[in-house]
Image 1 (cartoon, rainbow, N blue to C red):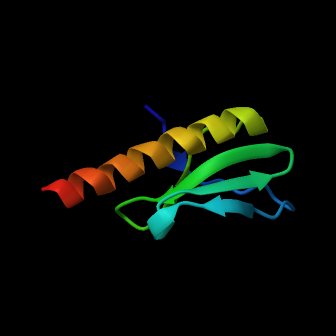
Image 2: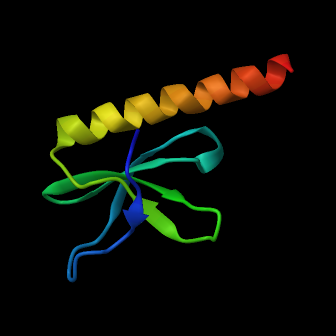
Length: 78
């Protein structure tokens, strides 16, 4: 389970979107040297996972992407 908190941009650092999942559900981002995953919550706020090194953020990105693809499969099957 991932913990989401409001996105808090670092002053003077530009958020770079590295990759976007289908439906724009999740975005793998960086504010060098930190990496994180963002999404929009139900209230329209941009939220992020905990900031980490690249490999940890990619693990979260891949897990969230797999969950999202499964959601699509389940929806199509019903």
